[in-house]
Every structure is written in structure tokens, then in C-alpha cells.
Length: 135
Image 1: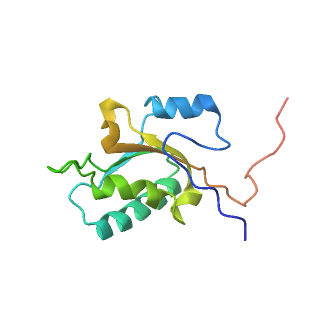
Image 2: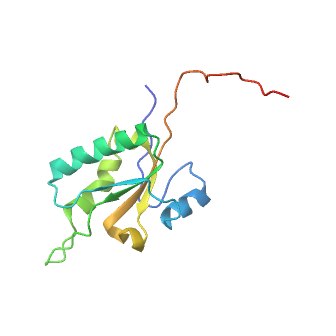
Image 3: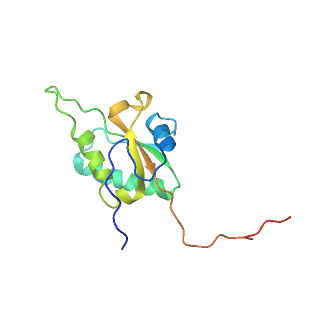
């Protein structure tokens, strides 16, 4: 069994080139799909997030948007989903699907949303068709 990847923090990624990470943080890698976790309970949101990430990766999506909401309460408390989603992204099996994540740019929700960069699925099947080029 391969070792688990190290935990990620918003806006940082070991092994990802700085240009790609900067493009993710600035919203230049446009999300191909999104999920809105507003008004879900913690349990509903946790299950929905895991299923969403699995389906998006299976469909070949690379960048997705996870909307948590800013969740500021009247007493200044930070929302439960805004706090827990980064932790859930670091839990297995989600962590193995993810290269990086960062808070969204203001046009996509700012700190109330996260861009998530997914790993490409690697297939173990050999490519179909000829392997050499015609001249």
C-alpha cells in the first residue's frame, strides 16, 4: 500500500509547479463543474462532497468549485462547513484525488468557496492503436 499523501493547506501544494498553483488561486483555471453545500447538514455535506469528487475525477474533470458559504454567524463565528471542508479534503479517499485546493477568487465566491484541482486518473491499460507515427 503506497503511503498517504501529506496533508494540504489552502493555497499550497507539494509537487505542483508554482505557475499552476498561482493560476488556481487567481481563478484562471476555470472550474468545470461545481457543488453547492449550502443548507446541508454536516453529514449530508460530507457524503455529497466525497461522491462529487469521485464522479468529477471519473468524468475527467480537473478543476472543480466547492461552495461552502462564508457562514458568518451573528456572533462572528465561522461556519461549520467552511471550517470542515478543508479537513474533509485531506481525509481519505478524497486526499488521494486532490493535487491542490485554494480559496476561490471573489468572482467565484471568495472565502465562501474553494477551487479544487483533481488528479488525473491513471489507467493501467496500454494505449489502443499503433504506437509509432507514420512518416
